[in-house]
Image 1: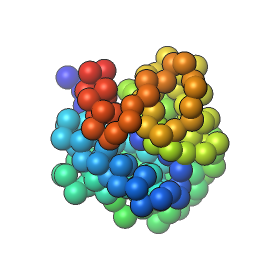
Image 2: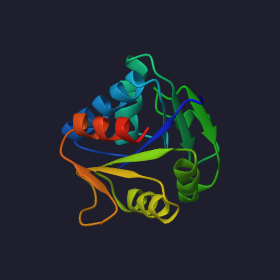
Image 3: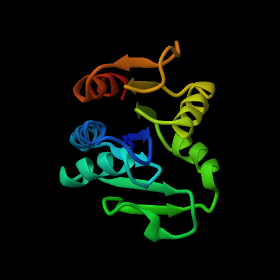
Image 4: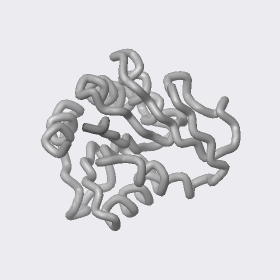
Length: 150
């Protein structure tokens, strides 16, 4: 059976509380034996990668620029694209499901792409009132929802 790829999407800068939620999600993704996919930068992406890294999991960062050094220090596999925000499509397409944590317009674009192509989205303190998102209140609920899908 191929390894599941779980995307974590969210803002490149965030509060300490949001960072910690993302870190807990990353720990849980590693615990499931899944690979974490993200945009590879800071904030939510770094928090999730840090958690997965600390738990012995695999992390992939699909970067907007042309330099591997843009990746946060917890990305094991940096993929440079030089596509800017268009790399959001690659994050979504590479993932079996996505967990949206907080986030701005970039996150909203990833949510939209995922829903358009039929990928499940789990939302933790993210864009409200989107019918197709499965909203949860905690990192643990997000992980339980993800486990039920994969």
